[in-house]
Length: 297
Image (cartoon, rainbow, N blue to C red; front, top):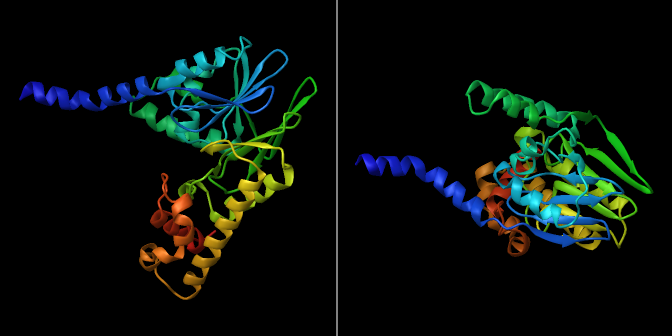
């Protein structure tokens, strides 16, 4: 019995280790200098500058070495800037391993605030050390917009208000014409809108419309999750979200309850086959939109 109990206690650790062992980092070439890395977590963006690497997001900590190895196949230049698109762990978990003397972490103000709060809780619970806590925090933060310059390239980071969270950032590599949208875009699937962290359906749609004002037909889009995308696909996605929002708003106006909306599959049925097979299923999508429309500002 003692051995069975020991095995059961070790099972989560063994499972996590096995999952990390199985992770493969794949690389999509988007332009001459920009790449998308896929592994376990949010998509990573890489820009190869004149003398440095500009990185967007870093997935989970246990696979940092695999990510570094993948980047080393592209360049030997140091990673100078690492931007977090928001605070979720599948985009910031690797901060602790990438934050070195040669790499500066950058994020919107609210990202640092939320990482600070969660880090303090882990410190109190003795889950992390003081050094690990400090290395998770962005060292440069901004409120609305931030611009980087690398030779002829201009890298624009801009804050999206209350979209996926309250601290979302999109990063646009102007000359390369590549836009990293973070989790303000889940390509080919219903989005996860974190209402508890400041997200909203209105802000989510607004973020897409702002992106469409910036890009053109040749722009390559790195979504937070999913395959590389483009303007046509994003335009379609906006129409889907607007239609779902309008449909559920009619239900809200008619006095329908959350349970009635969640159980009414007809409300999203025309989109479910194309977008409802990911992390957010149709019922949860209807629930999220309903709660977003009925919550107080």
